[in-house]
Image 1 (cartoon, one colour):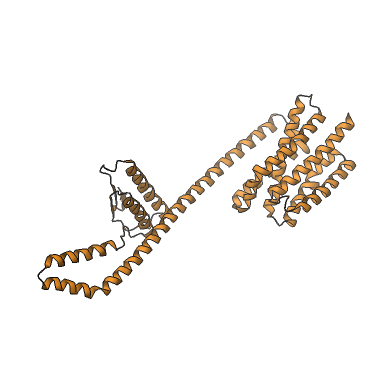
Image 2 (image 1 turned 60 degrees about the horizontal axis):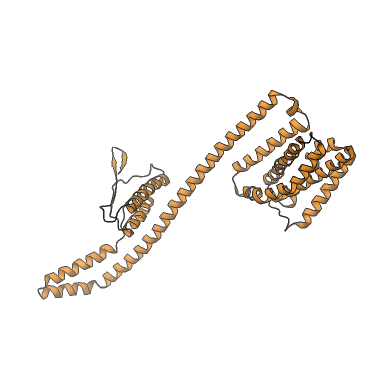
Length: 369
């Protein structure tokens, strides 16, 4: 039985090595299809080193020397051979070690029903290795790979948490047995660590979520402003062309009006003048606000209201907006007008629906109604 236990223990170490190397490489965005030769050579040489160390030094020494024999060389391989960021290299290996923990727990859990038989534990750990590795490659690696596009703060977070777990694991279970003999002190420490880690993750998650939402709002405002700016540029270009045509035809207009007056037909002359004025008004660019950004946002929603046949009255007499954060100000107007527009769209078109916006300055404060 001891020989059988040693055989399964050795096989389990082989599966641990296989899981760790493959998971680390995939988490570092080094897939098997593009690097088959590297995978085979890495598994072969690391496997030979682990086997020799196991046979010569024994399982206990191998377990304690694993960081120096496997983990650090694997980090160096990813960093030097594949030119990955050092943080990404370390995160990949430490995360693979962290994700290897469930297979160990599964083996311990199954062995619990067989009088904690080590052979059963090793067999269960071996069986769960491949399914767990598939889950890691398919569902976890895409998110770890994206870390190369994240900020240093995010990288630091993903670097520190696996590192702290790694240090605690080796301190409490490999180099000492404090986790099993330390009593309440160690257990309370682990509880405190989990709670603090949870709150740190929660705070950072809220911060990142807030920054993401703010960026999305700014992007929407910029898109709206850019679209409206294009419309106003096109409208201005059309107005300039129309003005050029009117200037070119001014002599003909004056001659026609003079002809109407000479023929004692003032009504036709008045009607013609009114038609010209109406065309000029329609070709002009309407400005609602002196602030360009606010004007673009308001103009955009004014156009939407016109398309939906919703009367809109706009009066912005305030002129000094420099003391406000322009993105917040635009977001305020955009939300207010969007809500008003949505509310009017829900109303019966036959009802007296309209939108009124008034912004004016009163005692060094701005009032928006």
